[in-house]
Length: 106
Ligand SMILES: [Zn+2]
Image (cartoon, rainbow, N blue to C red):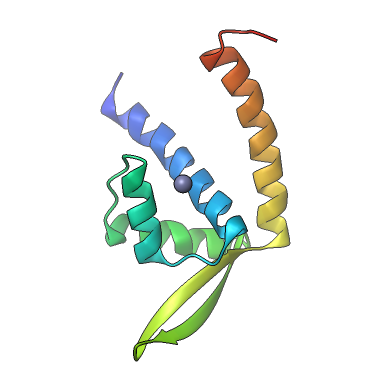
């Protein structure tokens, strides 16, 4: 598989992870980088932050700035629009999983 295509797939997976975790709790960039690393994705802040900004700009995430130990920190939560998208993506993911991973098993 070409690296470009893999990169394309991972871009979608990373966005799904972000939406999922922002639905569970408030997330910040640095914690999300750690979480994604746990899943085997190595993202730099320069890659992840634009993704968070884009999701915010498109109304899927809402950002709140907090002070933590005197440093400003951006926390993101999923919005109603983001939750709707996640529900949609989850249904498609289940279908895809059943076919591609479970090999068409009903
Ligand atoms: Zn995760």
